[in-house]
Image (cartoon, rainbow, N blue to C red; front, side):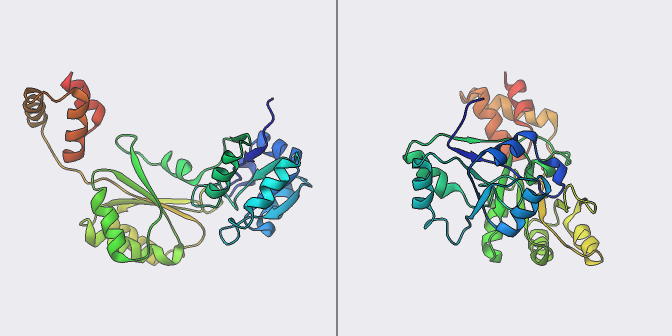
Length: 268
């Protein structure tokens, strides 16, 4: 197997058994593990009897650590980057470091593994594969509303903290006229729960259920009813204007929240 200088290693988001065999192997082989919270990572390492040295790397020291990591790699050390849970660089530190290491031509690879967004979406039925990942939503109401209005025709996936969820759902309910939403918490853990309903009903549900742990949520795209006859009529009009099948599928899917693939096939 090819060796790299720097490894991006996903760690379990809840259930320790979700770590991959390759992740364990790499964490044992490298010289140093860069981690957000050494206490959190040490629990994982102890569980799998991994003795590798750890160095803290988090959002408050990521810039000042750059030279240190470059120095270590120049000495021939191998480094693995982990976050507290899930895949690094998904709302976790790492982007600045990866950019710097590429400038120095160090070899970098990422392992497949646990990711809260993928785990959440794989349990949610939805039309189409496209979605907008917003990370953690901004704190101000106006900024949240801006995102909700900008991506009306696309499913919006985001992370949220337990103490902010209810307020965020209230903003979504008012801004998007009580849309369909889905909230997942404690994914892969004993008390895993995914609730999918109108924003109002989900708000009511969590009024009587204590919120703990990491949360992933989705606002479903607005649905606009359009008959097949009406859709075919609009396709023909756009074809007469010399729009390509691809352009027509993009235009009509954005305007009427219909499947791009469906429109594309009809346009052909």
